Length: 129
Image (cartoon, rainbow, N blue to C red; front, side, top):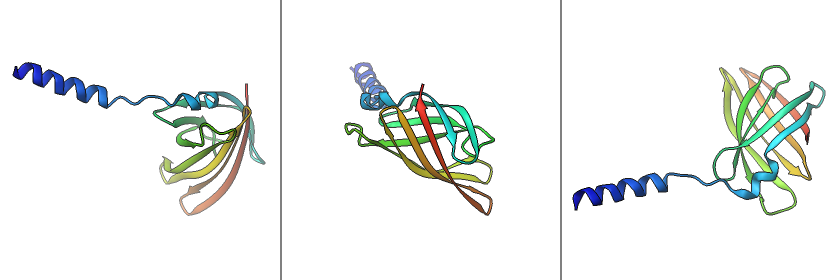
């Protein structure tokens, strides 16, 4: 009896801790040919799923060094999906935050990177390959 109860509790904890991917964000996932306006390009930007409506984006956000960030996607059922990049530390004394959108295979991200005491604004534009 105790074994069955413990097994049931353990199984319930495992199953409840799993996160499903929101299938509405799958059109966003893929490889993009991207440019950072006035800084760098072209390069391949990679977007993959994380959990729920979150994605992982890998790119040289400052034009030089590759970083991986997480972004939250809103309006998944709408024609235009919104990206929110919450404040994240991508390197020692380097933070990033911003927003953007996805529509018809095109992504645009507007973000700010703070390097020590210097703040730089960027705009990244990409087309899905």
